[in-house]
Length: 102
Image 1 (tube, rainbow, N blue to C red):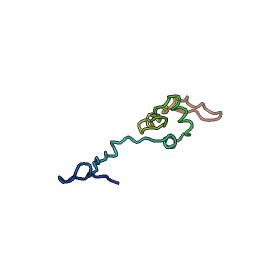
Image 2 (cartoon, rainbow, N blue to C red):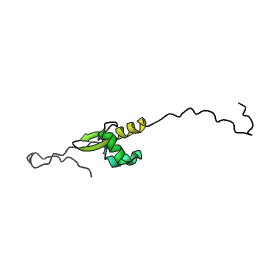
Image 3 (cartoon, helix red, strand yellow):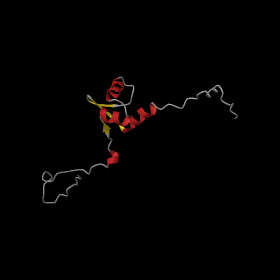
Image 4 (tube, rainbow, N blue to C red):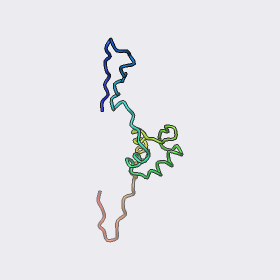
């Protein structure tokens, strides 16, 4: 639903015409997610996310007593969990297996 400003006539008083501002573009509005929504995006349990937020170990926002996560918070949580590949030792040769040549 789009709200548009109504132009006032010179004959009408300012109290007769509602003064609506144009809504901001969707890109300008921060989208906040509930713990359940954020947990679903991260594929973790909401309780895990709530515990980490209460301990302040993950980025989050509190609006009064309401816990919310911005898209940037969710991306930071995911990035913090990223691990680099481990350098595994080369597998040992099994008995009876021919030697490998580089």
